[in-house]
Length: 479
Ligand code: UDP
Image (cartoon, rainbow, N blue to C red; front, top):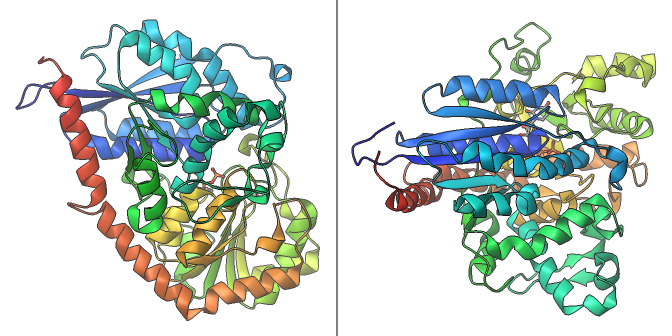
């Protein structure tokens, strides 16, 4: 581990549970690994919630055999009934948070010593004591929009100002949250629902971590200035929270080589082969990420809606939140007649797909998404117009960013996923809109170019990573 200038930058990355948290972590780590004098130690909480996570970790580590070391963090036993949540991913966040103190003794003897920690936003309270005890700078990676980060960080300001109102966001947040420096307030109806449930695990983690953001050394966000210029500027000008450390827009974090499955399914029925046989821009791709299950009733309306849209479709169906449990067949949910029509017009899969490749396929002309930020960024990267239907969490706030950017639409009246059943007719109409709108297409292509510039050689992303490495290098001793 040596280099011309004699100094190695050694960064420990700590992801949290779920692909939506792991994938951007590894993509960010891969950006640092482009620099040969950078070494990464990946801390992997074990067990993972989903199979997809453990597969991705293995692929990442074997892709960088000389530059990446892996250290397992064996999670302490955890009683899920001790927390007010039924979400396996949030419960896992908490389990990881409660096990993080195990890291300090494991990491204290690493050589070369660590230059920085970069960890998931959900781990702040657990990681700050570890980084303080090892005297290693602390950075987080934020997996959502800069708009969401502004809201998250501004919560502590609101809380401090309104303590007398009860301390719960449900009581101190009114109809909308005005964030200094950001022109569009966040309506109460867009706030992650669980934040408004007093005593929920979600609320607990948010409220515990928001005031600690000023203790960090920096924040990496998967966004880029053309997409969210106003929010990034407001954050860095100290308008949102005084004393906030620098916010580095290092997006778009794009799919990397290591994400490709070695044994990709290229049989006649595989999504990519099927797409090959469709005309250019003719297919709407439908996928709600890796942890959003759709209700049976909504599935039926979606099936009918996709058929009514008249467009071809590639639909990734998820019936259960956690992949290990997803053993039901679509035939058990949809009528044989509908199944028959669907087979004529589209391809429905229940398996994990390589979304990056799908969105990059020329036959895909639109994306019906659940508003997961990784998915949205991937769509922007490929210039694909988006129909963003926020299902949960920060996904309505993301949908606001999508609509504001002009690269997609957000049917506000659809509400959260599962709140009310959105009818087939509406779904069909919205799909037709994104598939046929010339203005959406034009804006999507504009943002695609901006995204590629930001992530390209000499772009904002590269400059920020290089500057960070130089900064950490200066603090290092020579080995
Ligand atoms: N993804 C994928 N194949 C699938 C489902 C999801 O590659 O079948 C990837 C998708 O490309 C994205 C991530 O999983 O990178 C999902 O993250 P996102 O933030 O969009 O949503 P989440 O799953 O966290 O709700």
